[in-house]
Image (cartoon, rainbow, N blue to C red):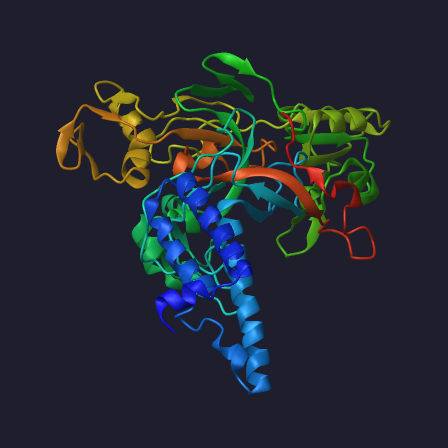
Length: 489
């Protein structure tokens, strides 16, 4: 048949579905701001109207097993394409893996993350297997092809990141990963290794293969946005200040406490009643045995007790539980128990080496941090004072996130080989923190989150599983199913 004959023989049904796909393609092209997408109209024209390419050749086969197989292949391919499209531009599933946002979001919550809230990010590595972040399920290996890699572009969304939003994003320092120790970022491992990054790379037995991951293939994290672009953030005695103004802690924020009892052991039932997971009150001893995070203080001298602010009563030293994460409501509930003597918030000594920026001795801690300015698109920093600190704080932004060559030598900054006394940022950056303030690796540890790492906003908890319980013993948290994930501060 000629082209004209094929067109004239097309049915109303064919023209209808062709028109539907043309309208969808036009709308998507306008949304994405890319005229190249209109080329798909030619594909749809052949699929529905001219049919020069035998897209459904297998339907005419007389081999029934072959037809049945191809029906399954056709359905699976269509499902994979649909899932890829929805996952890329509309919604993505995410599971809460750690307790950093307890009790706002719980370990085992499965979230539907809206990419429309902040605008979906066009794929940077477009050739990838649907629903696999960076590793193929079962068989292992990369779930994506590294080339081509497209430049960062974000489509228009319903809004922008605001303070106290809970945000899903790609782990900023997850660009380089030691496969045997993926729970700790490569830069922290290098800091802790006596031989630095060279020691990590050379010890493959301990650390495994060292791999690089593009932005959209880095691990997904979820935290609460505390600081916005252009603001100055600081923490003093565990209180957050934005541009010098106090920011109240989120309602369900937690901190680590010591619980001093009269010697009574707190039962697992009471911990469960308070909503405390086993991982929050149990630890392993030197023999690998799981034990409660507590100590019988019998025989401890009064000076040692006084160091921790503890006092015996009638010659009874009591029992101490340590590093137990509690909300203010939990503290009040425990204080009402007759066997509880004191509940004391734990303090961390300043000067720990694993707080941002890692390569500068600030003396900051998890409770006393900053002040530090959060970079903003179009704003400029100068290198005419406090240069060493600014280099430590912003080198990664300039070099790793914005793609410049960066050197600091003899007290001078060189960007792309040219001595520079200033730099203007191309991205907005955000400061993220967990509500579980003493048990959260967040921007206090690995720094700012660039705008190109933002994935989306959790909207719905569609499933919630309690890891400490069995399927027939309360594993499914029925009261959390299909609840909003938009937890207010």
